[in-house]
Length: 286
Image (tube, rainbow, N blue to C red; front, side):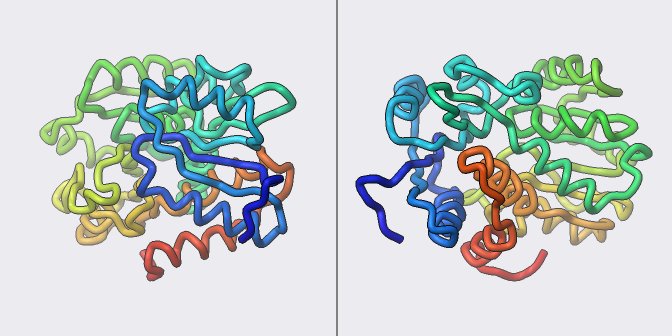
């Protein structure tokens, strides 16, 4: 891959960013399609977010991805925010459109596709989302329209209540404190269990919110964390003999593909993107 003085830039803004495989994935696509662009990771502390957005605005950028902890705070720094991203209250993709920076959320559609492709008749199912941050909001905002009922559990109960109230305008949503006693009572009543927190993400791969005794055979279990490929959360679910596990790579690759299409206007080679990420994660199957 050649980086030229004329190369356009894309970047990942977050803190930390060391764990991300977005650079490998997107740079492989740029090279494969002959696009004169390069994708770089930028570790951006909270107090440097505004300055970083101005650099993207004024420099040779196609756009950016946004990850923790900036998905929510970045909205106020953009010129426009897509309707879905505005409703979610979180942006994970910025596209430079003329002289404007426009915010989108590709996490939600990617997660919904990953779940819907594995679960038939979502309208008859109940789902539990663990977490109430940017990823949880993106997943819940779309999922609540497709399931019979949605439960939100978060350590800070007020955030769970706030999210459930917002979701109640779109579907049936309930809030719960993320406490093991509460979850023990709730989990038999839900069909889909989603970890939308960063717990278990590399390098803290031994951590999990739930262990095998909480999962049941009828559960479909999805983890938004994609690194490692098989998180401790999914390992515990498999030990419990759940119906199916869905790894975070499903969401990660598709959200990246949707972002790429916003930046370039070209169709993303999804299978190439998946193969790059799988190789980086050591291959294998879930």
